[in-house]
Each structure stands twice: as structure tokens, then as C-alpha cells.
Image (tube, rainbow, N blue to C red; front, side):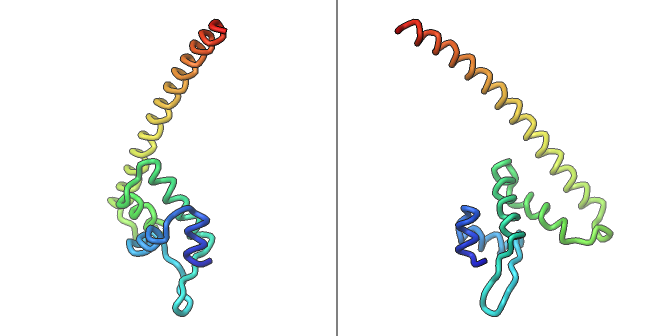
Length: 123
């Protein structure tokens, strides 16, 4: 697929896609003067978008997306530990966000009930 189709299907701007290429997050295939964007790249961009929404920054994403490209036997223990620590930290943050959202939801439901009761009584 071409970049304009990729941008439309992922709702990510062409300039952002080109930037992700520049920093090495995605690697389109080259065919002559054209770049070919595969379904895998589309899925990777959607994952990048989701991870950014979850709080991952560009440096985090570069670390995560470089991992599958490497031969596991060539990874240093320090590098693996960094990736593992990052994933654990982000999971902890997400669990905290889930808890806060759940509490907020419960509070809003309670407020809605009270307002609904007042509304019905005022009819």
C-alpha cells in the first residue's frame, strides 16, 4: 500500500509516518522509487499509536521495536533488563490508571443516581 492509504487507514499523518521511518520505528520495503507499506507496518503503526496513548515516549518505542529485529543471543543482559524494567513500569502505570478510572466511574454512577432521583422527584 502507498503512504497515503496507510495514513488514512491508521489515522496517522503522512509526516508522522515519515518521521517514524526516519527514527527507525518502521521499515517499508523499497521498490524502485516507491516505498511499499505492508499490513505488518500498518499493524505496527496502530501499536505505536496505542502505546503512545498508554504513555510510552519515542525513546521507549525505539527500544521496544528494536528488540524483535535483534538476534536474542546477541542481546546483552543489560539491554534485556532495560526492556523488562520499562515494560514492568508501564504495566504498573496502566494498572494504576485502571484503578483510578474504575473509582471515577463508580463516583459518576453514584452522582447520576442521585441527580436522577432529584430529577424524577421534581416532575
